[in-house]
Length: 351
Image 1 (tube, helix red, strand yellow):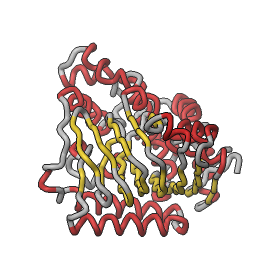
Image 2 (image 1 turned 135 degrees about the vertical axis):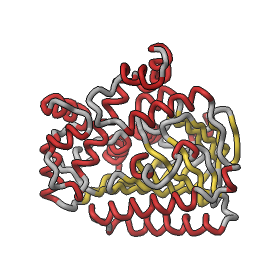
Image 3 (image 1 turned 30 degrees about the vertical axis):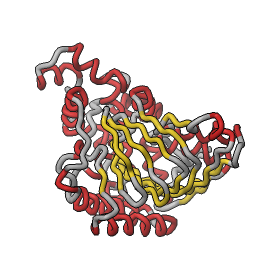
Image 4 (image 1 turned 120 degrees about the vertical axis):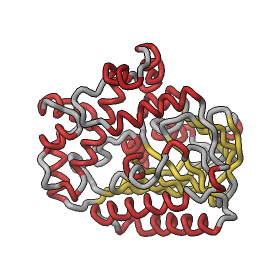
């Protein structure tokens, strides 16, 4: 599979109970998403997990069961992974204690919990089985009025609409092996629309966990950046002028993400990658996409893209156009490594 860019791939993971090497591989692979550990030394010595995940059209869906574990997404993890995704978490067995920005609550089996992976969160889960869907923020953006209110929202199992959403996600996982690139894109958009309809029905917002003032400021900056990625002059200076904030305030807000310039570059590259691999945009020239994403110089764009994803924009476009639909499957050590690249948005088809 070296050099290929699968439009859909499967990863099978397992940690044999008490296998320290596999446990560390699992922690490393999960690193872009969570700083993870067993609850204590005893739990680590008997830790085990089995999981299967699929990625298609920038959407990932994972089902599995695991021993008790602690998951933290702190500022360092956020900066290192730079994920701008929304996760839907359903515990089919067990649940977790959830802490978000100083507020705590319990997630029970059957509840649907929304997490914004650009913001801090801690989960403490006993032995559990779960189904997780991960979507780029941009996929949900056209459908959800205020994505920033999703972080920590819980759709309780008792709500009839919750059962419909859970059933849809279970069906999506069951059908994932058969989805090609075009079908995957349609499924992703349909799922986003469904989420929007159900997310608005969560006790009129009573389950939304409050945000801190600093988080609200960062999210205001981020919304503006996302809406203006195509502006060639987007940068610290334009943000100073737009929001009337000091240089120190702006850089303090983006410090966990490696700085405002690095964040803007990452978002531009991710948007470019998404547009290049979208079958609906196959007729758009790579140079036009670069300009649309705020890159005024095609050579600068190509070099930055190559560094970020390990493949040039034209190579990626050619691979997607040539294969249309291709599938790759990874397991064992390769599965753990592929999961890490997958979470970082890199080419998981390159072993």
